[in-house]
Length: 275
Image (cartoon, rainbow, N blue to C red; front, side, top):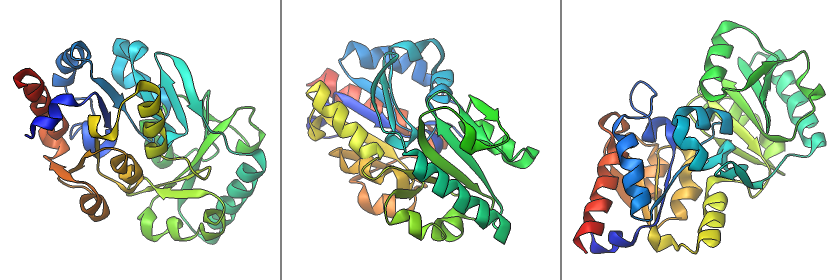
């Protein structure tokens, strides 16, 4: 480990395929690690496509003092207070949802999640889709019409039962001309405002905290992590990361099933104690 890592002050970590273990849980050793990081002046920031309610539930009592980058960068909250948000225009939500409904009519096997600040909303109600959506959206409401909700919409998420990168991800070209369309997992695609991503959110935190990219580490595994990795000099692709992520990151971390994030952070802390 390079001595420069002794100065790391900010660590941004993706959740699925990165921090979470093979069963999708926060690894137990993290609970002992979080206070050690705080004692050494290092901020630990979960950065995820998941909603804020889901992230808060994952971290329990620790969540009240934590900073979260939620909804792929569209919502940033620190110690329970909103730092930044970027909601979609209602006309864009209307156009996107109607297009996705037409794709479903054409035979695409997909489900739409309209992600608001207060809750996420779905119309499709079968167990197969609801079980997938409930993993990422702890606050989830079934409604007759997602276009009739009263909430600030941060993101539209699409679950594709095929491989999203090769299926619905290729059917959103018109929306992608004006808005950000990102493949955030093997089966998920997100629609966000232009200029919204985890990297923009991380750079905003760096500016607010007076932290440089050289003092920042970031860990990720999928395409929605690319900009976040660009914002950190100490960027890590997980062992099973998407090939583009591996190519973009400066370093590699062991598999999430081997607690690769925690192992690497322990190395940072060892450097801090040594120098």
